Length: 509
Ligand code: GLU
Image 1: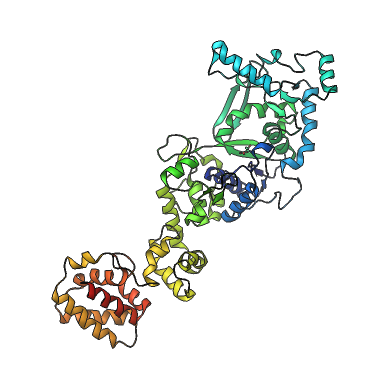
Image 2 (image 1 turned 90 degrees about the vertical axis):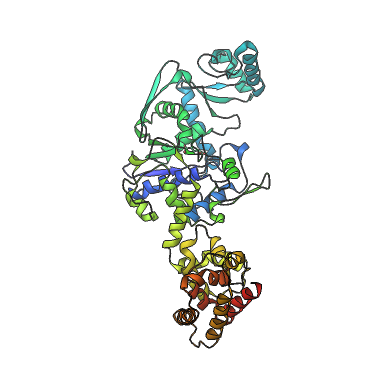
């Protein structure tokens, strides 16, 4: 095995990229960068029945958005190209045949109908619920090169009878490997079925292709979801039977991302049900025409999304929770990835986003925030918007919040909380606002300190305290009980607009 760390993300392009998938990319990426290694993106599209138009392109877009770009891929090329398994079809047959020649695999001629019949017979025999398994206990009763005579096999091959190649999993043995996260894991081969390695159409299955490609692409470490653990014994046997054991990558099976209540794996349906995204970006399913919302479109910054994902299953071994991608590269270690599943917490995800928004420069946020503002107020000036961003960013958890939190900088708001003013309204307060308005009209340097000075002067004249007037004033200018400092708001919206809003409110009281 070469010393250079080489990892791979090997998605099957079958639909939207679940946050668990992005986390697998992320851990691959962090590990590779931390060790000065290479990160490969390999498209595992051997199952043509699951092919989905646009899914591959979508994966690239997600990785680009997250800033996790591979060093070698179908797009970038590289020394081990092609990186799309369907384009490597010609490579796999020889390995399957090699296994047959050595007695580790065999031809199986059973038709789909025959296999189906066996399954239903099993159910009839009172074994309902037990699935028929093609393995050491049943393979002799099936139509394959182990049960048929050589002459029969040759005749079938001669007639171009379709066949698959299956691995011959031994009965009553154990296979063991050391997972980087879970330690030593042993499997009883008696429980493993004779998986198909090469399909009738000549395409390899995932099991054969993943082993062959990890070998040919000189992968040193393979990180994949925990759901692949049951496939590990088949892969271990293949590494052994192909004579490549010494080159087998070190494996790490990453913990699942769980539903918020910890009850099972987080699915797209949970997101729909609980109102949060599960995919990295919007996914338009070409089959159903349905669009599923993504973290990007819901208003997450990629660095916040990545930071949140890094912490779902890994701990940095210190208090710090906020990390940039380069800090994650610096601190990441596979030893601190947890064995147990990580519960997804959407409120916490938004907290990461709010923190990253808060710590981003106004200039960086400008192009990200602008579309959300322009959708309501098309003629927005960048210098003005930059100031608004600086004033409201600490209150924003998601990018669309910039409009919610700052709309009154761009439009005369509807006064939603008039009742809160009315509750403590009296003639003295009305008189205060009327005389303050007069004073404001003659202010020439329209600047928050001057505005506040005239305010304090008018308060004194009316024997009022700041606390008596701040809330009504805020509601008049903003429409509700939120927003940054009122005098800064007045400065930003200008004298005419400030006077207009006060007057509007007075006429309603
Ligand atoms: N193609 C598999 C998937 O879709 C990859 C599993 C692996 O990384 O070995 O997740």
